[in-house]
Amino acid sequence: MSKKRYFPPELLEKAITKFDGSIEKYEIGRSVKGLPIIELKIGNGKKNIFMWSQMHGNETSTTRAIFKLIPWLLNTSQSEYLKTFSIYIIPQLNPDGSKLYTRHNANNIDLNRDAMTLSEPESVVLNKAIKRISPYLALNLHGQRTIYGAGNSGKPATLSFLAPSADEDRSITPAREKAMKIIIDIKKGLSKELPYGIARYNDVYNPNCVGDSFTSSEIPTILFEAGHYPNDYDRTIVTNYIFKAFKLLLKSLVKKSNNNSTDEYFKIPENTESYTDLLISNVDIVYDEKVFKKQQLAVQYLEKLDRNKINFVPIFIKFDNNLPYKAHRHIDLKGERAKISFILNGEVKNSKYNKLFSLKTNN
Ligand SMILES: [Zn+2]
Figure (spheres, rainbow, N blue to C red):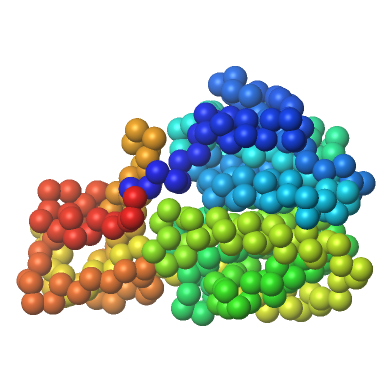
């Protein structure tokens, strides 16, 4: 169970109130359900940076990182950045989804597949904002599930980045190149702390995705994905890494020149679907009235909102003699002669193993 993963509109309002008088705040539109969409502005420089978070309502780490970035920027020692940049932030593009802890908006639309259609009020708000701000860099802020690994490093993808493609050929356009070079600086800056935990997101061109759409309009855009760090189901550690990545990004932008080569970008390991939350070994499975002996069983945690907290509900995903997954936790039931009734994508219920399979968190 986590209290920190849930970041609803009420919490956003409280977080913003703390900076009343020190940052600019505007309501720039309303969600399907009529909730306000807020834009913040910090700094008065000539170069516009534009970022938006919680386009997917259940991806909250980057929003939490924004509220680490703002007080840090307001600290006088960062005044150079505030003179150089105007930073526009929509901390919660999808307030309805943020309230319900869902990826989609209230019309059940994935806003990151709506860049061409612009069928949703939230998509229109984002599109108008990008036209008005005309940023020299855009940050599309997201969070990803625990299932991703960083290539073959054997480590989970704690942070993943993408310089989205601008066309089917995935050409390295000037906008894309700029995004790639900045990503390399972030990766280098985190190389001691996260030597293996940084991955590169799939760059197949999809003009329905906002990052691809903006890049093809020659706006350099970086996709951030806050992922999993061992035992960090609260995502406190990754929130700090996102905050560090923001700082490294600003540092990269004020450099006189960026000599990184795009080859270095392609050397970043790819984000791969290689993990499950829990892998149980040596278990007999009862499935379809048959018994399968000595199996491996993969369990993933489904995040469910329950009274302002996120519960992690264990779900059976797959079983086999030998599953191809890495796991964030292993349990070997050898010797217990455990027999578990299996329901595909079903909750682990009424089992004496329920407690054993539950996630142990600090909160
Ligand atoms: Zn997302």
